[in-house]
View 1 (cartoon, one colour):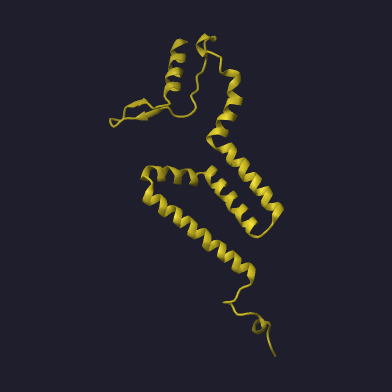
View 2 (cartoon, rainbow, N blue to C red):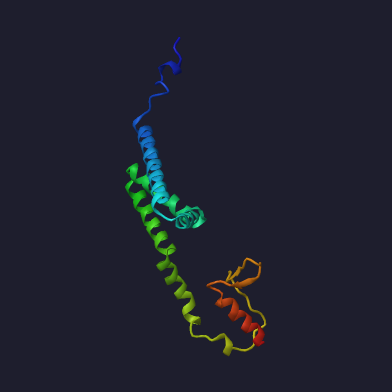
Length: 160
C-alpha cells in the first residue's frame, strides 16, 4: 500500500512561487548588505549611526516595513494592492520628512505666531516640552542649540 508521502515531491524541490520568494529574499539581503558596506566605507561613522537610529525608531521602521510590503506585493503582481501600498508609502514618506513636518507644524502654529507671551497676563504655569539643555563635563547644565525655549520659559516664570 502506497502512502501519500511517497507520492509527494521531494523536500528539496519547490514550486515557482517558493522559488520567487527565495529569490526576493536573497536579492533583498544582497541590497541591504551592499548599502551597509557602502555606508561603512564611504560615509562618516556619525552619519551612519544617525541614519541607522532613524531607521530603527518606530517611524523609520514603519516606513521600511511599508516599503517592503509594497515591493513584495509588486513582485507578486498584485496591481491594486501594490498601488494602494505605494500610495500609503508615498503619503507617509511625504508627511514624515522635514518638508511635510514643517508644513503640518505651520498649520498648527500659524494662529499663535504673532502672540508675544510677555505681553499676556501673568501665567500660573509654564511647561517646556522637550529638551533644550545639555550636561557639561562637570555635570553642570547649559543651554543646547534649541535652549532658547528653556530661557524664555524661565523669563516668563520670573516675570510672574
